[in-house]
Image (cartoon, rainbow, N blue to C red):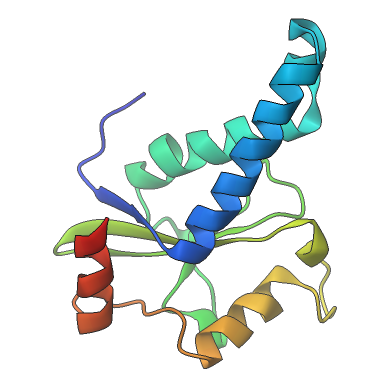
Length: 147
């Protein structure tokens, strides 16, 4: 794994989703043989998510293909190799921090125009004030210190 100059943090929404994914992987590890385990789609997905958050995104969190528009323009998303899943995050260069905010689940797969689309779910959470794109926001600072 490549060392990143960014401090990586995980919002509770993202952290809970990753915890669910890890539990699924543990259950598969216990019930499948090695070859079946390595080939299982959930295991492969978990590997791709981990690689994205730890290695790929921290290389350059402001890559043009991560940028969103409109209401979500202050946020970024990663989708390469994740099919209908999206990792939503924000970042700052000063201080150098990436905050992973949201990873959709099976109930919110990408389908443009659908109410269950991960972008629509993320927008709803934003409107409720669940996330801030500003690492200097007092609520964000308090939350970062707790980790």
